[in-house]
Amino acid sequence: MQMSVAEIEAFLAREFPQISEGGDFVLEEVGPMSAKLRLRYHERHLRPGGTISGPSMFALADVGLYLAILAQIGPVALAVTTNLNINFLRLPEPRDLVAHCKLLKLGKRLAVGEASLISVGSEAVVAHATATYSIPPGAVT
Image 1 (cartoon, rainbow, N blue to C red):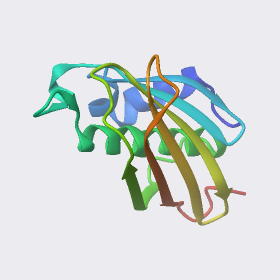
Image 2 (image 1 turned 90 degrees about the vertical axis):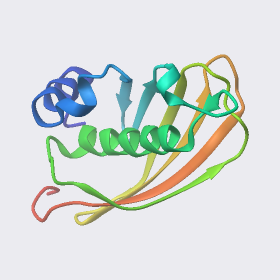
Image 3 (image 1 turned 30 degrees about the horizontal axis):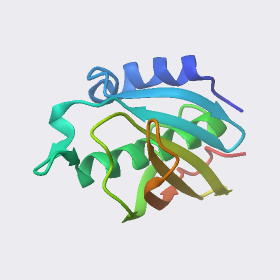
Image 4 (image 1 turned 30 degrees about the vertical axis):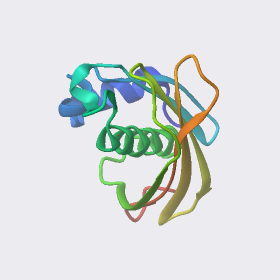
């Protein structure tokens, strides 16, 4: 691993204050080819009907997979999402959501991963995402 949770948090505060300042996302852990990110429950994440909105779940999956990549390759701000597909499987409860992110492939130019989103206190996956990220030349040796 290239970056720890503390190093990633410092990087985000410096490079992406819009993500780190709100306190919505909490990076709980990073591991080999993986990361676990929490979206803290707040009413601003709800849609009509009282469930967590699709855009909030999409953001959780995208940020979680990006952080899993950073943990492996180091502080590369310009690793960008090129595709993200999400399947909404069940209505999430109005509470914290956790994204369990796993990288399936980490190449020199592309990274591919998947994220399973689960409401805290449940074992049922509420959404599943797959994504591809472009990695700038020279970022992975």
